[in-house]
Structures are given as structure tokens and as C-alpha cells.
Length: 169
Image (cartoon, rainbow, N blue to C red; front, side):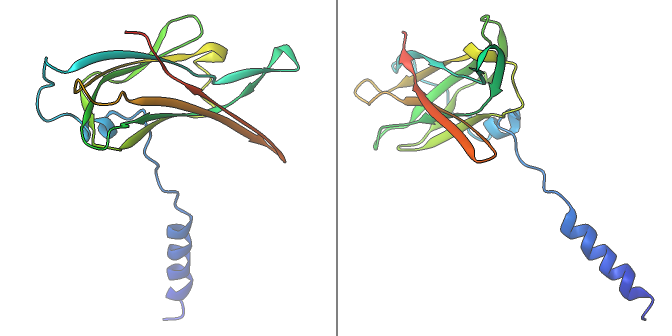
């Protein structure tokens, strides 16, 4: 019996060290859970919003860049009506499409928020990346709010700032 104790302890150490797999906001299965179960009505008001994102900023000179984590917050500001997000597309500094997070309608219930995270190591967007988000809402419902928080910490220093989307259609 004493011979099995080290094997059992080693097994528990292995289980304790196993890293849990985190869900990525890039993974499509996260968005399919939010898919609108009914077709989005034509009577809803259409809108498109532009949101600037900074996955990198310049530091000291144009030749040194500092990477940032960006959290894109997609918010339904209505306390009564569901809104529908039709798609969310991420573009780099040069206007090239990097990825679409979803290309089918998803819903946000009243006062609900969902996020997209651009990890600090993902610098594909560069210093001038941006999102285009298309959405639909009831005629008399408040517009959705799209914001981004960019942040980074290094040692004892940290920086963070925000941007807000602008409706363009």
C-alpha cells in the first residue's frame, strides 16, 4: 500500500497543475450560443457604427511600439427591448479585414453586455485598427453603445484609455 502513495500523490499534483483551457472571444462557438433564433425583422431600424481600437501605441518614438489588450464592449442600453447585432468586423491600420467575429445576427437582451477581447500579443491590427458593427433595433429603442478599453501593465506601470463608437449609418 505504501508503494501506491507516491503514485497517487503524483496523480493529484498532475491534476492540480493542469491548465484550464480558456474560451476565446474569437471562437465561433461562443457566438453561435447567442444566435438570434428568429429572422431579424425588416421593420427594425438599421445602424452601422465605427469603433477605433489600438492594439499598439507608439512609445518614445515612431520606431518603438507598446502592445495593448483591448476589450470591446457591446451593450444594449434599452431596459425593455432586445437588439440584434448583425456582424462585427475587425480591420487593421490599412483597412484590411482581419477577422469577422460573427456574420449572423446575435441578440442582446435588455441591458445585456457582451465582449470581444483582443489579446495583448495580437498585434495584427496595429496602431490604427478598428471595428465596423452593424445592428438593428426597434424604432423607439435607444441605440446600442459600443466602447473599447485598451490597457497594459508592465512592472509597476500601467496605462489605460477608452474609445467610443460613432454611428456612421
